[in-house]
Length: 143
Image 1: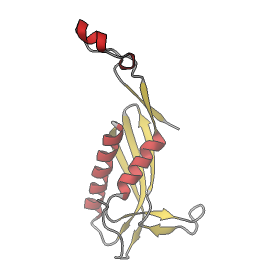
Image 2 (image 1 turned 30 degrees about the vertical axis):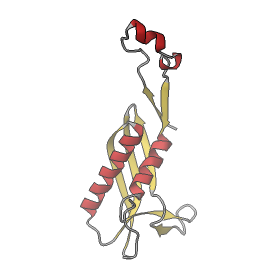
Image 3 (image 1 turned 90 degrees about the horizontal axis):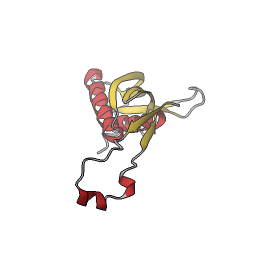
């Protein structure tokens, strides 16, 4: 499992004599934050799910008997390279839909949410469309 370590500055800023007397010991040792790739992938999956017209495969065993589901998160994977995340999404879409604009919106939303929650830079989002659903009775975007 890949993990990213976010380092925080452990050197205190220049302070005056009065300020140094009130500084608590925990402020000097801030440590390191570790975010596993699986956590980043879960955030990406939730962000993709929040987009309209996006669904996932659900049920089945080894892909056999899987059904199209607009009420669960799509599959997501993440590769971490330092402070950079590369995401892979496997999802389904309603049909007909404008693929280019829909995928652009999904990429923007996922990128914004991952960067907001993790502080990582999303360099690339690969999207695999595994199915299209011609049914018009699907949910709208979550707000």
